[in-house]
Image (cartoon, rainbow over all chains, first blue to last red; front, top):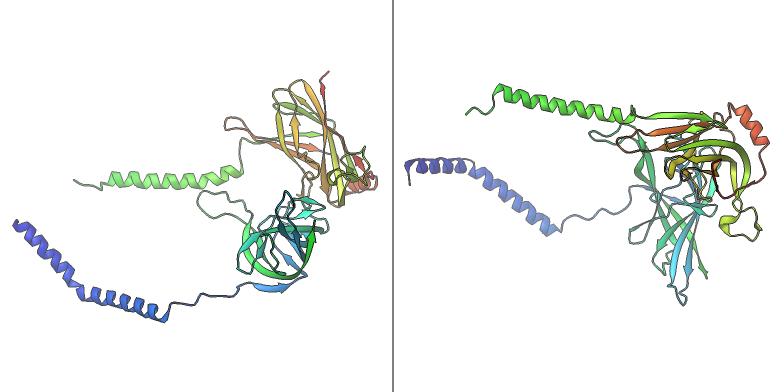
Length: 204
Length: 205
């Protein structure tokens, strides 16, 4: 071993040892913290909602549209010879286009209304069918249309305490470098959970 | 060896500034695309596009639209029953002469002077103006659901997107509704039901 290497090693040891006590104390504190957290069992998972719960019928402003959520119905379809049993949840609602920003005719998106199941899973709707047509373009300036949103639930779903989460749309620009400044309608915040009592019916 | 000579640093700084300037320039250009222009026309006056000549022949208002005028509406399928509205239907009849190759003029919308935008109704699947093969004329119509109190300066807009080397063209056809008073008169004289017919294709001349 050359003298240079020996000197280098001495310098390295000095550097390592200079703050050794601080390091040891720091690591010991972290270990102590982990042990304490481990023995008290961690944190409770935060439960509850940060959005308000409202009872139907209710009228909500979701950005582009004003929704009057009215009633819910669970439709069971029995298994036939060539078809499996299925269940759909249908929610009746009035939809009015209040889009002051673009004033464009547009249909209701499928992620505005979401079914919140008892297991806190979210199921998107199929948008809204008005006058029997899915994705009916709602005209700005006309009165509300009566529409129906459909949620595909597992066959046999029978939870009649229906909760529908409502997510707004916001008219804003995207953030980032090099993107166009022009604002557009994009998904916003969840604003409410609407609670309805569903009727169960069996259809053929 | 001297790694950071002043000239090296200067080149780096210049590159960073250039990149920033390009970033600043991009969104602006995208909004005001200098290659885009609008071809304007009016009812009865041909609009010349690259692949077609479009003539709007007639504009009518109606309270209902019957997609299949020959059937018994009470017993018809859901899609063949007359479409109803809380507003008014604007029907636009047009002829398109194909000149180069088949295609589409693009999605059609109606716009008013208030900036309101109407789109073709869903019940009738047609929402685009098709270009027939060269030498043929297609006569067809589009149906829009509209607000009867917001019809002034009604204009049919179509947009044909093109590739990088060719310009994008917008087409705007003035549908002859100069102000709301004329629109009100048209709404008063609106037809009860508009019989929708299938597009027809015929040879030019």
